[in-house]
Image 1 (cartoon, rainbow, N blue to C red):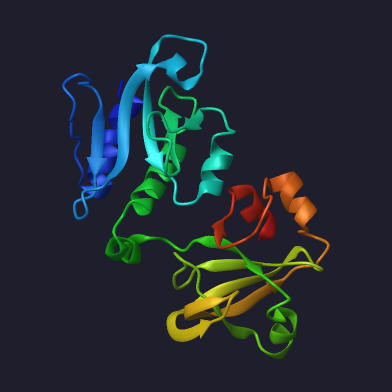
Image 2: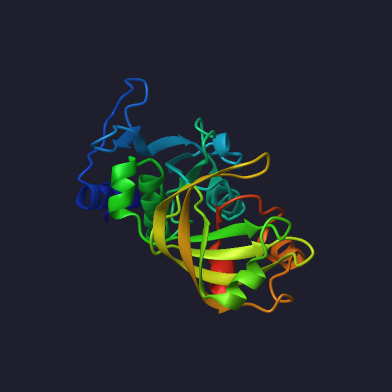
Length: 248
C-alpha cells in the first residue's frame, strides 16, 4: 500500500515538477522541495519523535512542514487536530502537519499548494495563484464608504499587499459601525496613485465592484471575535473557510 508520504512525493512531482532533496547526512529521511526559479523551500518532510510536537509518545512519525501566507490562517490551523507550529522553523508562519492519517490527504495537498504560493516568486504568484478572499478595514474617519457605494457600485480603494485581479474583498467598516458591510470583487489593480499624509500612504490603488451588502447586525466585531477568532482588522488578511461560507 502506498504511504501518505509517497503519495505526497508523487503529487509534488506531478504538479510542480519538484523532486526531493536530501541535504543532511545526519537526517537521511528529511526531504526538501524547492521552487525551480527562486530555489526557496516550499515543503519539508521529516521523521521525528512525536513528543517533539508535544504529543505523549516517542514513536517516530512523519510530518510535513509548510508555510502559510497569512498568520491568521496558521493561528486557526494549529488549533485543529493534526496541525502544529512548525517544528524547527516556526518563524514566518510555518506549520507542521502529521502524516499519520489524522489529516486527510486532500486537505494536506491544499495546504501544500498554499505553501507553494506563499514561497513563490512574484512572477510565479502572478501566474498561478487562484483568486483569494480578503478581509480589509475601512475607517469612516477618513472616508465615507457607505456614501460612496450609495452613488456607485464601483469605487477606487487602496490596494493592499498581495491583492490581485479577481480577488474578493470583504470590507469591515470601523466604529461606530464595527461590522463587515460589503463584499466586492477586484476588477482592476495597480492603478498609479500618490497620496501621503501622517496617517495614510498610497502609491497604487485598485478598483472594486460591489457584489453584496450585509446587514450591519450580521457580522459585527463581537461575532467575528466569538465565532471566527478575529480580534482585530488592521490591514488586509485572509479569512477562514468557516467565515467564507458564512459570507456567501
